[in-house]
Length: 258
Image (cartoon, rainbow, N blue to C red):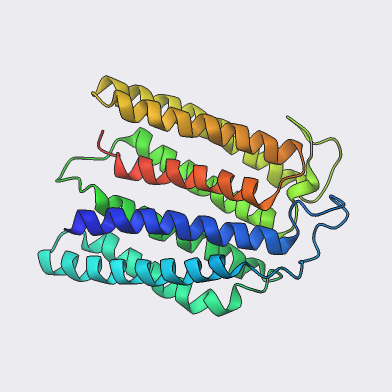
């Protein structure tokens, strides 16, 4: 039952994080007209009724699943560290929730983003218990790099620097946000190399289908990343790029023993 609840929590957290990202990017003016002159001035954007309602329902559902999973884990004395981390992440997100509407607070934006990732990772860890089997270094490296990229991408968004480097592979002119973009691209290259290492191991250990699925997500993530960097990104594209990173992160932790 713990595994089922954790897996359900992973699905709900993915949806919650992606919906939150879409709302945040829309409020920041991402993809506004005329681009990029209008970017950086938070728009008077109110999410549709369905989005606000879905966000609240998902948040309550995740809270219930996390609390239930934590109680069961502590009673069964299994996965209690990951369950405690998930519970702490939920508590932290609830505490900063009232402040998340202020896009001018860089620390709050980052904490909100990374708190969602920590919650996702803890639930993914609980969804597939290891039973004493050591985790593969390649999987942990993929998860670590994906988290690092999320932090870097969140910093780019929090500083309204999405348009700081609208060219590939290097930035055409020096800009305070250009260093963040270059670091993001370097980390992305490292992540691709780690993914090749990990998926080769997956395929050799009988996880060919999992390796293909991870490869498909990685390819989609590369495409959305290039589109985000090279064009005028919209909230949906940016949220989709974030979803791809979350899927790779969660998969690496859930399949860490394969």
